[in-house]
Each structure stands twice: as C-alpha cells, then as structure tokens.
Amino acid sequence: MLGDRWGVTDDDVSRPYPCDDFVAAPTLQAWRGVRVDAPTTAVWPWVAQVRLAPYSYDWIDNLGRRSPRRLAGLPEPTVGEPFTAVAGRAQGRILSVAPGQQLTGEIMGAVMSYLLVPVEDHLTRLLLKVVMRTNRLVALGLCVGDLVMARRQLLNLKRLAERDGE
Image 1 (spheres, rainbow, N blue to C red):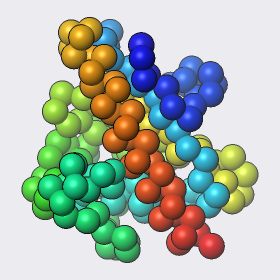
Image 2 (cartoon, one colour; image 1 turned 90 degrees about the vertical axis):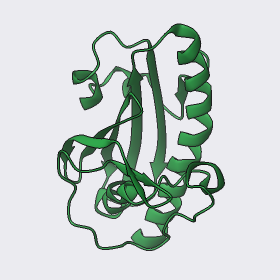
Image 3 (cartoon, rainbow, N blue to C red; image 1 turned 60 degrees about the horizontal axis):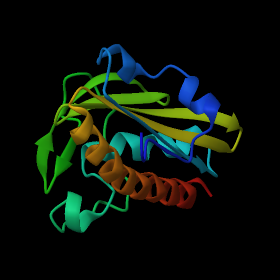
Image 4 (cartoon, rainbow, N blue to C red; image 1 turned 135 degrees about the vertical axis):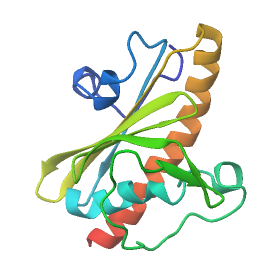
C-alpha cells in the first residue's frame, strides 16, 4: 500500500508487534521507524509522554498548542488510561505496556504500537506500527496522512531523546 513504510527494514516489518493481537485481518498496516542516538532509557520517557500530547505537527494535531519539550515526570503508563491528549483533552486508551520496551494504544479505531529496540548500548530503533480495519480507500488515505504525521512525531521524539541522552 502506498505510504505503508518509512524508515523501516524488512526485519522491522516482519517482527511481531503487540498491536497485531488487537486487530484481526487489518486492512491498514503501516510501519515507521527511526534510529535514535540515545539508549532506550532516554527514549522511553518521551514515548511514554505521548500521553500528554501528539508530538507531531502541533498546529494540526494539537490545535496549535506546543507539545511539551521537557519531561513531565509522569508515572509509568498503565493499561486503561488515556493514550494521548489533543489540546489537553484525553484521547484513546492504552491497551498494552511493557515499560522501557513497548506502548500500545487505540485512538479513533486505529491501534498502534511503539517498540524500542536496543541496537547497542547507546542506540535505539524506535519503531511504530499502526493497524486498523476499514475499507481500502479509507485505509489508503489514512496511511498517507499517517506517514506525514508519524514521521514528524518520531523525528521529534528522536530529537528530544537525543538531547536528553547526551
């Protein structure tokens, strides 16, 4: 499908993701990934902080409010709590979490898993997979739109984690 991969390898695509356990026979599957020059311990707090804001294009995804650029010292995420927030309003819910390893949530019918894969002591692959059951035309539009927004989100999380991981 057009726009279903960005920054991922065949190995990234073939690995299991927790989101696969929540959506049988998805019509939309999209993978995104970025290499972060920081250990997973520096990346995880930023992934866990998506509970506060989307970290993509704030003028679109956060109604003009800037996603926090400092860690808020949040407790570890738990299943059932809100997955993210838009303009301060809770959205979606967390479906699965393994602190320091993965965060899976649901929002607007899509289920997504963030995976942190340690590459070396100081490098992390931050991977995102999005799955959804919908019609193929909607899936195509969502896949392309998600590519733009998820790419910005992962690059923002990368930049923030690298800044803090120095």
